[in-house]
Length: 348
Length: 158
Image (tube, rainbow over all chains, first blue to last red; front, top):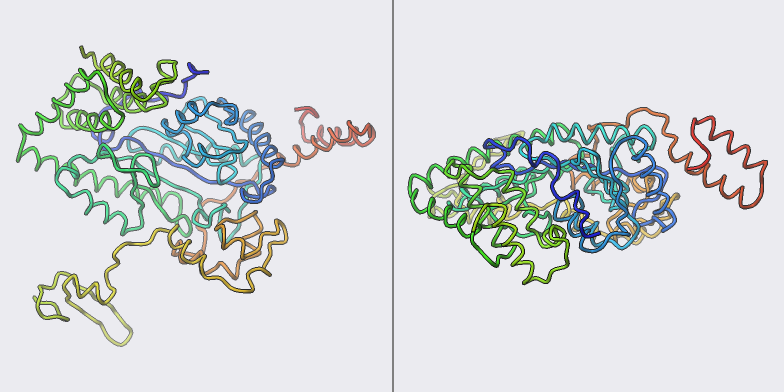
């Protein structure tokens, strides 16, 4: 099923992708954890109950909304890896070795993991800083499921989850930020430490434990009890605006000090992407960061953010194989990746 | 201004605490603030707090058992996960402090489940029972189950 890459480019990717929000804030993500009252949680869930959970969730989802269901067990490791690269499933979900399902709504921006650490993990993902919008979509889906299924809920502790750290709202709101100004001016650590001090978590591109690459940072809330959903979302949104301001100021300073050096770095990065014959995923991330920066400060005008976002996702190791429809070794991948990027950027 | 404690380095941290009887104001340098434990080197994440608190074990933990899924408090402390929707109730007095320290709160203030007939699970069970009745050729029983399913407005088959 190598050519089955419908999920590769989420909806909205070719839509309106301009403005500073979309350059500094790559994406907004909301996920909520829900468990069914009548079935044991993960650690006590027997294989038979796993199947019941999946059957039940799938039938409710398919009855209530349009979308497509993927049986994780039937998918190849490559396809699963691709779902992770597209941020549709979690690293935990990828490694699990038990029946599990994924439902992706027709619009493509809501995905529901069935039988992860919690029975249901409902996730919404969109471009730019739109946490409130995407949370509305997520809760609309949750309410539809909740018409038919009784969620585990307690008046004191809210929505009950497998892990005590998710009790309450079960909500994680996160934004993926591109902060080259802060990285170049060595201010990133200071600013992000401030975020941690007010109770936020700061991580790399692929969540917990992942490295910081391409000046990309993920910021998310950590507390889920004693705080309303909209307040968690507001806190992250406000913090993001503050960080955006600092980032913009850092860029102004950088450009005042060393305009030519930075323009040189940006255009050299673009030239490399347009000309390279062999290129690794990490190199792409770093070069794309410079190009994104160039678009953000208005010196690159003929490439859109949509193209940058697409390259960022499609050039990942599993996705590039699905894109070309063949299994590729690492070295072959680096060659094919370079080929795809040259084509995408109209290089030679 | 020099540090109140060492009197050598410049004070960069201003600390003010309002107590019932007096107001304490301190002007300290970073290393003296560190010594007094006023600066957290790294704020602990909820996961780290959880892992730390789960180590506080008690001999009686084996005897506290959730009556629904049979998870013991001791096992909960080993894996850090609840076993079912009843565990929180069963362990409440023992996990109160843990939850409070993780979240800095002990009361949910967010959304609540919306009303609905919530018959999904019941329908699943009835369909399973129907299948069983049919394989056992218990047709009278099967007819009753079918009627029940009909009353929910759903088909007897999936």
